[in-house]
Image 1 (tube, helix red, strand yellow):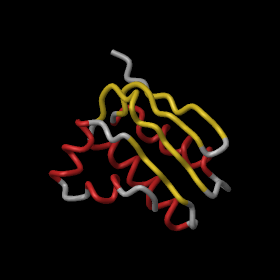
Image 2 (cartoon, one colour):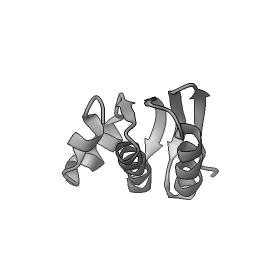
Image 3 (cartoon, rainbow, N blue to C red):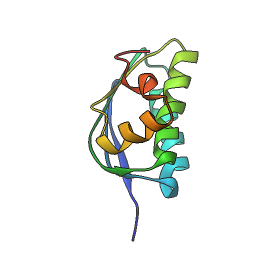
Image 4 (cartoon, helix red, strand yellow):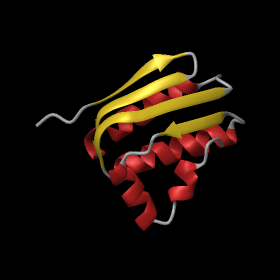
Length: 101
């Protein structure tokens, strides 16, 4: 089975679709950091994520932290149930559900 996740969009508005797992997390992390560089506001639509694991959650957290470090405003949403559950168990849900960073 091929695990795929696609980051699409431009000009600060992006969407993730597919499966965000350990198998593609490193590649997606890097492509997101390249895409978001130099943007003041970043919106990432998550409604088309079909599944995600803890590595996927780590990608989102890395993007949040990078945006914070570079003074960017980042909005994630809606957070899929599966990711929200992992974040809740890890007690980091607030980091992802905040409207902006």
